[in-house]
Image (cartoon, rainbow, N blue to C red; front, side, top):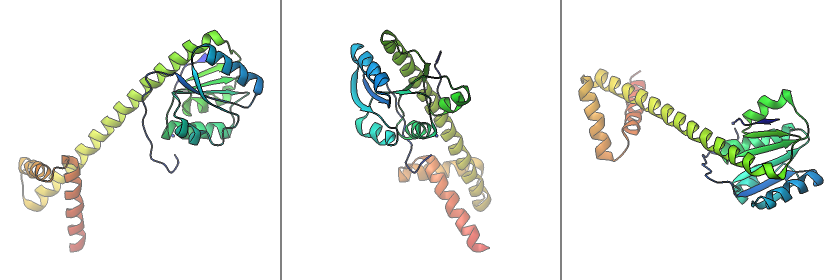
Length: 216
């Protein structure tokens, strides 16, 4: 069984990542036999193993420190600690994640996907399949990150439009400007200050709101 899906916060600032390739691998697996099988399969497939971990408690820190292209995890079944660490990686140091599990966990599938796992493979560690699995997971990861960035850009544009419209409305109300005059005033301030129009608009909103509060 193989699921190729993509699945957020802690006190750090989220970052975005875009992995084009996936040559440097970090491996997490507490089971010596399975871990050895995965290591050999990865090395035979031409991957560089940058770190081999047995416990998930410092996973985010290790990903940040060693900067792998892809994260491969072997587990009997994903537990809460592992899922929490994967959520942290997803939010603050995103990487393609492939999870090899001994047992299928239908009740955990949704949580695994939400934690950012790009491929979930159950009871099927075959060295010759590692490269295509990793390639597909990395491609899906790149696609997901591009979609997230596009969504974030759209949200930012909408937020900017709202604050500009609000600033124009306040200038029209307080200064008696027409909508075009208000827009041109904001645009002139933006050029004079060398700041984005939305940033200037936000300052105008804050200043006028503060003045209005002082009049109350």
